Each structure stands twice: as structure tokens, then as C-alpha cells.
Length: 234
Image (cartoon, rainbow, N blue to C red; front, side):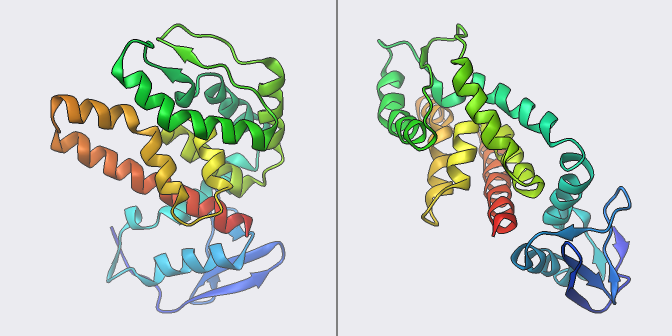
């Protein structure tokens, strides 16, 4: 931690968007670029992180700042590479891989995951292959092409949030569905759905507090990434 070096936190409209100002000095990214964000809503959320610091600055309590750095320094530099990496998650999406049909878990997965997949397919005009067991089956090339096109159409800040959600959920379907959610509680419901197998195993074999803490942290990270992407989109 470092000692707090500023008094006032404001948000300024600048060329290209909005920038958090610490005593009238604009925040920069780790890479040295002006940390300009696309919407005032995201800028205000990031300013709140700086205002909440005490006498010492805790870097771990500035996650939106870190995501903005990543969006500017990494994603904006090569969005095509990020999109390509995310399409690989669509190829092996968690929601497409089910237990064997004779296992009780399969029925639960069908009940929870199948409606989500069908809704996603209808919204995006794609078809996803369902797989029982662990043997990989490829998704249709036209489906992967449509998913990549959707990702490439996202601005860098939104794409950064979707990437974080996808990696946490091991599911591109879940991330894009959370981005497009129309109700406030949908992202949490989607996260809980993608954790179905973990919850099933915990109910079956008992709960481990360390595993529960890890999942709680991942949940918080997922919801924060979702909020970041949605605030950046406006």
C-alpha cells in the first residue's frame, strides 16, 4: 500500500470520453496512456473507488481501475486476438457439456441449462451442439463465425468485461447473456446456473469452506465484470 497522495476526486469530460482526476491530474494506465473511459457512468464508478480510499491506497480495492487499464492497454491494442481467444470458449462452452443421460445430474443440467441455451440460440441465430460426457465435439463453423462477429462488434471496454466473465464462467454463452440481460437479477442467476455442477457436488459430498470462499470471490468478480461491461456500454 502507498500513502494517499490526493485530496479531491473529480470526473472530467475530455476528448474521447471521461477521465478521473486526482487533484486535477488525470489518472493514467499502467502503460502510461490517459485512462479515458467511454461513459460518465463508468467514470463515476471508478471515481468512487478513489474516493473510498483511506489514508493508504489499497490497490486491490481498485478493480474497475485495473479493468480499465486492461481495456486500454491490452484489448484496444488487438481486439481481434481477444475475440479469437473467446471463441475458443464457445467451442467448449460449459453449458453445452452434460453428464451422461443415465446420471441424475444430466436431468438437472437439462432443466437449468437447456432453456438458457435455447434462448441464446434464438437471440443470436446460432445452433450449439450439446455433448454428453467429456469427449469433445466441434461446434458448427457458422456458429463460431457469428459469435466472433458479435465479439468484434463490441467496443474494447465492453469486450474486456465479456472476456473476464467468460473466463470466470468457462462459458461465452453465459457472458454474452449477462451482458444482454434485461433484468437486474439476471447476471447473478446466470452465474448460479453455470455453477450448477459445483453446487451439485457440494450437496452430494459436503461443503468445503475454502471452495465456498473461492466461489464467492469468483461470483463477485463475475458480477463486477458484468457491471463494468454494462456501464461501459451505456
